[in-house]
Image 1 (cartoon, protein in one colour):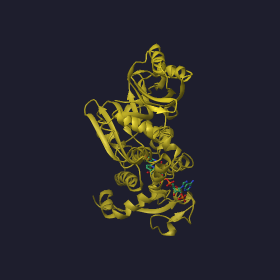
Image 2 (cartoon, helix red, strand yellow):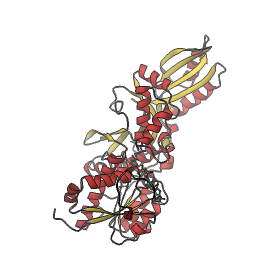
Image 3 (cartoon, helix red, strand yellow):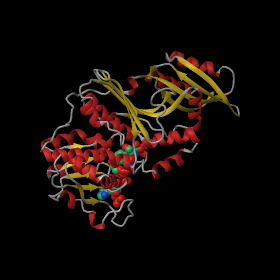
Length: 430
Ligand code: NAP
Ligand code: HSE
């Protein structure tokens, strides 16, 4: 490609991802210029605190605390939003489009909550918003779904979409680390969100699966209706019992197109040790999907971190730079042309693991099994794992049963005088 004038970018945010983007642009500048048809130059970077130490060397004159120095600069072609959260990011992205700029963002919360409207706004201004880094860090997913797999009808996506929680669960399982210690490590490694509650409560993964489901099933997904449950209740005992039973505990994000409705959810799950997602460890993410023409496809790679996410953002910057050279927009537009309702989790049928502490006396297991039977929940396995004083720890695995029946049985079981505590309930995915 012939070399043209440099493409000037303004970056909003110089944290984990922003500094990764700067590093990738610097270290691979020559190859990037060749692929983009000319250099990609960082003209200005927005931060909150000018005095803060940065992990990359940046001339101080590039930094600003005034977003208008980027948004109102007519020489800036692309605004790269890496500050996170909904506001002011939303406002900045819309203003950038209104001012005729192209946008690249890594913001999954913004795209999950307002992506549909933002893409419509971009189309109105004949501009693009690219967001490859918003889902699964460095793994290419958005473009493969919108371009390479566009010929398929996709029925199911399941994956590990949060690096922080996968790191925590891996360290708890492999080294018996405390939850809080593993979380601190994930924060130090730059995987966690500014507020890690988003990671550990499953919200971050909910944003990502909502984005993937919208693209794959061609329907807007109301992210406020995506069921999400995090990993804060998972204990080392659950991990150990799951292992003895032949399972690994993962935070799973799943989306299924059932024809008349879609099922989109995030929750911890016991997955069999030979399942392709069981061996995805640390901050790695993986996504399995099935297309009617291509069959099964699996994506695997680093789902979080400065450089992997920087890789995805820079890929978008190069693609957008090419669009600018060729005067093209709308090559990978919003693909939603349907409006499918979402299935409530209470309507689904699931298998469950449950761990409880009960009085160690005759007839207790039979009484609990009786309630499960009355609720038409059939038992796959039940094991007594030992005693703690006058209490026995019992682990159950059920066959698939409607969530509503199973939860109804649980309420009755919890009220039995012989049941001291229902310690945890985790769905099982085969
Ligand atoms: P971060 O480390 O917290 O960095 C945020 C940056 O934005 C900081 O430089 C901060 O400035 C700046 N900033 C925040 N609010 C601002 C405001 N109102 N005005 C001006 N500057 C502001 O976050 P991050 O981990 O890089 O994540 C950035 C985005 O990428 C988020 O949307 C996140 O979900 C997404 N993402 C992150 C990862 C990952 O692995 N971390 C992976 C994929 C996607 P100061 O430095 O001055 O405080
Ligand atoms: N906090 C996110 C994670 C960053 O841990 O996966 C990548 O989106």
